[in-house]
Structure formats: structure tokens, C-alpha cells
Image 1: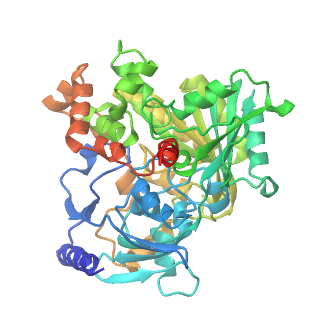
Image 2: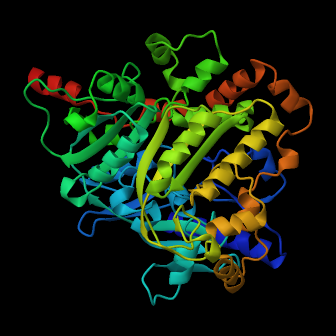
Image 3: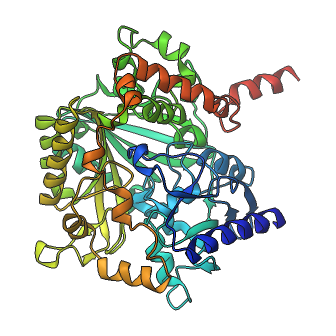
Length: 523
């Protein structure tokens, strides 16, 4: 704990010095899961918190953990599973950090029950923009309750999180996973709502639309009972394992619609389930094969190139190659009634498949998280807590930078028409009035900035908006990277240089039950 205190004192002193000079800064975490253009961050002062990356303690009795902000999900899960515990919401990419889950937006397949990641945080140690170190809690009446709520999703614009106390729940060995085939968008939405019902007893629910007439709703229940009667344990972390989305598609292709109660069931070890989308990054890893065509998208090459096809490496390559400027990556939270017209819009105008469906329990607005918005007359200033559906849209956009911006702007307009809200990790092109109409709460947010002396820092809008005049950065380096295959090769080199592939190779959460079983038999 003393090492942590010393590190926080250094962060506090750095922030205080910048505050006294009224200099804005950005926070350096050591990694990113944002797809916003990196060149927009150039030139700002940096507060380096990359060394805050340790799990300080796991308390099995209170079911809590004290965790520094740069601890990624896979390291967190490895620590908590030793005590038979797991966070209620675990981001499905292993490299997403605890601090990113609080300061950004993180909702996953357990969020229909547990809400966003920050709703399962008990307290946060935070360095205020003045350099003062405080402990903030969400309970009404606590001294910094307004800051706890306001900083959640505010991208570090109200302070720097340096330690988080997380609530945990009991873990079990497996997730009994059921795949239900759907044959229309409306049916997929209906089945997701059914699977989220309390009487179903599910711990996890999400879905994938492969087309308008083929979808799958995936539900999971935690269990200590393993497979029996010829059933097998299914894993997704090993190089020869299938990618999860391809596995789900293959299991359900031959099934009739879910209206006939037809489904497939299997047992997935808990950590394998939590990080099932890591290999292939859901399905965007296929885009790497599109880029490097004629390398065939076959099981052999997915095995051979496995080191490069985990999400950490894919993010490195995406930013290093410059292809983030033409790859459309958006997550949209929508009222259930708007899901079908939105999917129709994406299919007709962008032709991006598959699409991810994730049900969410959302808090009352205003918030920077996706939430149920009030009517237009309220300008998004009010809303209610409730359930909504996230739709992940990830695929190639127009190659021309101007057309790429137009496609994103058109998507934003359609989202607004349907009462939806975008996640702010992605490209955001709103003008400022549009932004505040979507997220609401400007007066509350500005009051918090004034109260906690954060007015010299960039606002959330200033951090997330893509500067259109910088969409196509000038200079010989961007031009060179735009030439195939130079950009892609440079992205691969950046990934290799990072060494991130070793993190997955050495991961201890990967299922090795079959090996352990053989050893016991041999003994």
C-alpha cells in the first residue's frame, strides 16, 4: 500500500503544478480501447498514471477488491477467481481497464442485471484538478456523491481516478450457455427481452445478428455442475479453438426458428465465457484478412496468425495502420422499440454485418452513458431508469475521408431520430448543441466543473469530438501509411513492438481442465 501512496503523491504533485499554471492535460494510461483518432491528442501535457496497475487486495469476506485503475480485466479476473469471486460486470476485451470502465462506459452481457461497470464500484480515490486527493462514494448524503456520479463516464474531465473499490459476486466453474436461433430482427429483439426476465434466472444475455433472417440469442447461467451425458467443455482462448461468433453461427445455422423451442446448449468455463470475444475482436479481426487479401480467411491462418488476432494486438494495429479513419466502429444504445428500424437503416445504408445485441439496465439521465432519453421538448435533460438495447456496428466505412464523415453524421442523425445515444469511445461528429441535446445535463456538468476546479481541463465534448479538418492528417507519414500494404505492416510492427501478444500467451485464466485431469489420472 505504501508504494501506491507514493505513486498517488507524485500524481497529485504533478496535477497541482499544472493547476497552478492553469495548463490543461491529458491522462496517460499506457493503453487505449478508444477508436478516436490518436493525432487529435498530440501536443497536450500528460499526467502519467500508467504505473498504477496492481490489484492491492481481494477481501473474500466483504466480497470487495481494491484495484488500481490500469488493471486490465484479465488480470483482475485472475486475482478474484483465486478467492472464488468475480466482478458482476466484466468487459469482454481482456485489455480494458478498471479505470476505463469507470471513467468511460462499460456495459456487457451481464448489464441487463447489474447495470454499467461503474454501478458496481463502491468507492473511488480521486485526484481533483487542484491536486487534492479525496475518496468519493455514491451513497446519497456522502460528501462527494455528486462527484462520484458526475465523474462516471466523464472521461477523466473531473479528476483522476487512482484507486477503485469494486464489489464482487460469487463465481462458479462454468457458464451453461444456450443458443437460440432467430429468423427475423423482431424475433431476436423479442427473445432477448424474454431471456432477460427475472424468472429465466440468466446471468448473461447477448445476441448476434448475422443477417435479417439469421440471428442467435445467447444466454448463460453460472453453475458448478459440469457437462454430462456426452456433453463437452467448449473453450475459445486457444489458437485452434473457433472464434466465438463463428461457433455460434455454426451451431444455429441448421436450427429452425426459436419459436419451435429449438436450441443448443454447452458448458463454457467462466473466464473463457467472459473473454469469448477476445480472439477476433468479436468479428472485426476478419477485416485484417480483408486488408491483407489474398491471405485466406481459413482456420489454418487464424491459427497461424493467432498472436495478432487478439483484441490488444488488433487495437495496436488499428491505430498504427491509420485504418481507424475508415473503419466504422459505433455502439448505440436504443429503446427496444427503435431496434428494428435502426437495424434496417444499418443494413440498407451501411451493409455492415454481423451486429451485436446487448441488453442494458440503464440509470436515470442525465449521464454520459447511453440512457433512455426524454422527448425532444425536454432536450434530453430528463429521462428514466430502465432497459434498453445496445447495438454494436463495426465494419468498413467509405474509403474517402469526406464520405466517411458523411456516413457517420448520417448515422448520428438517425440515432437521434430514434431516441438513441452513442457510446463515447468511438468517433463522434456532433456539433456542441447536438451533443448536449443527446446527453443532457450540461448545467449540472458545468456546475461540477466549477465546483471541483476543472474548468482548465478539456470538457467531455472537447475530448470526444472528431475535428473534421483533421480527419485526413497531412504529411508524408499518413500518405505513406495510406499505401497498401505499408499501413497494415506498420500496424503489425507496432503490435509486435508492444509485446502485448505475450500477455495472452501467458494468461493463467485460460482453461486447462483437460490437462489437469490427465495429470491427476497419471498420478
